[in-house]
Amino acid sequence: MEDLMTKGVCHAQKTICTLHEKYNNGSLDDYSFEEAFQGCTVISKPFDELNSEYKQIQYLMRNGYLVLPVEQILGYIYKPQLTKTGRMQQVRQQESFQCVPFKKLCQTYLQQPGMMKAILSHEKEGSESVLESYRDGEFFKKEFAEENENIFPVVLYCDDFEPANPLGSRRGQHKLCAFYIQFLNIPRKLQSSLDNILLAALAKSKLVSKYGIDSILKVLVNDLQEMYTDGIHVNSPGEYQGLVKPKLFQICGDNLGLHLVMGFSCGFTANYPCRRCKAPRGTCQEQEEEQRNLLRNRENFEEDIETNNLAETGVSRNGILNELPYYHVTDNYVLDIMHDFLEGMVPLEVKLVIQYLIDDGKFTLEELNSRITAFSYGFVDKQNRPCQITAATLAKPKSSSRQTASQMQCLFLYLPLLIGDKVDRDEESDVWELLLILLDIYKLVVAPSISIEATFMLKAKIGDHHSLVKETFPELQLTPKQHHLLHYPRAIRMLGPLSPFSAMRFEGKHKPLKTFAKISGNYINIEKTVAKKHQIGQSHNFLLKEDITIRGTEVYSQELVPVSSLQHAEDVCTALGCPLDTEIVVAGCSSEWLQVQIKLYCRYRLV
Image 1 (tube, rainbow, N blue to C red):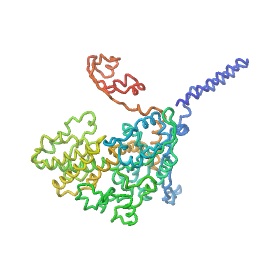
Image 2 (image 1 turned 45 degrees about the vertical axis):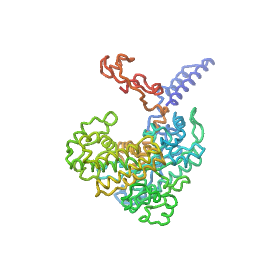
Image 3 (image 1 turned 180 degrees about the vertical axis):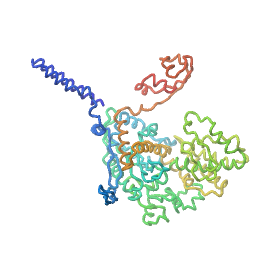
Image 4 (image 1 turned 120 degrees about the horizontal axis):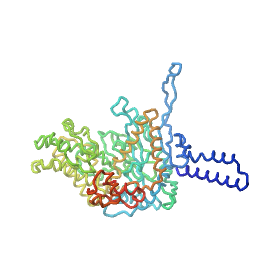
């Protein structure tokens, strides 16, 4: 908005200079003053250029803050429509999806104050023995480290979501398929922010099914190839000036989304249900460790394409992503922690263990729910407090747990504390050991850093886990998600810690899009409405020109002090409603953050 105020000031300066010249020339009269005052109305109304939505959008686009989505036509259909005369006629309508010009969006995104500085300072040489980031993985060292240019790895995420009422009569009719992109080399503390997950495309799910997902991906592939070939010119004064080349690193998503994008079988009861290996369904029930000779690679993938038999290969098509010269679907090692664990193995096995212990008389369901309700989960997890467990949920272990992924994670981590005193480890050694081994596996999988040696310990624990599952619950058929567990040690060695690839934060990106749809109240061309509103909202961050590294708060110390010892103690007492002799915990914040915020508010906001 500075340019609007500057424009008014410049106009005022010009008017004053004109009056001064007329005064020196002796030509100053009443008309000159009247004309000058009329011209200065721009100062009293500096925002007249923004008094409508159209003017606001034009202003944002003109100054490079807004990148609007572009409509991409997929095809045409004829629909019956009632005319004004009451006659029914066939009207030609186009079917399309919304795609954000990714090159322009990336340029605007990377030129935010502090962004290039954060990226360049975050990059460091990979470690040989400890996996701390994607740079330590074998895949990056093989495919990216040898390139001397400024390569910026990006991840592409694909998933469906329902913007309308999922229980209403129109459920599924307006279902949308969203494609998000995120730069992988930004600092980890910024990766969790939804502002740093960029919308790439938005399409109706029924059109994706009708025209094929490759019709959507084709536009994204062209953008990715153009950016990798030509690069993006980034002009960040004082930080970086030059070309950067975004390069697709991995595809993320839930299992169904990944199989759909990469061209594998979308039915998980298929003969070959796994995208990482060619193990038949029967073999998957027996495996306790990954078999190298069954892993998929480019050679046997090409053979499967030539065979052209989904039942015999598990491959449905040669996806368009393989047209990228540097990418192949068999090199996509991503495994989704959220869906494999928190919406797969964990609720299944937790329900089995709880039901076993209840049947054995160790505690009742009412006692367990009472402890779940009364337990103190602490400041971090209090918002993820699990719901009470019902008998109907336990009776169907493979059905929905009625818990969100965050709630299930909270329940899983605290379950040994909730019921550990009720368990006789001698009598229920195998059942209880199964839960504890799965807990150890999960902690290793979500660890922010892990040693190479620990991945082999993880492999051994996974073997023990599968053996115990078959021994303790012999009637249970292993699910595809339990089979995916065998591939986690290799995936960690190839990609580093897997948390940045989890669908947890990407699915959080659905929430603002659902909000836009709900607020609009109009589901005609809903993908255009949602995409446009999202981009307008994102332009707010670009308009602020705020240093991206100081948007959050870093708490580095805590100290118990009396309020009377603080500066502006009376103001603090008024804000908190406490006397001067009250002792409070004061959390310190980084100096950079304090410089740009109101000091009093910042220093004591984390009391």
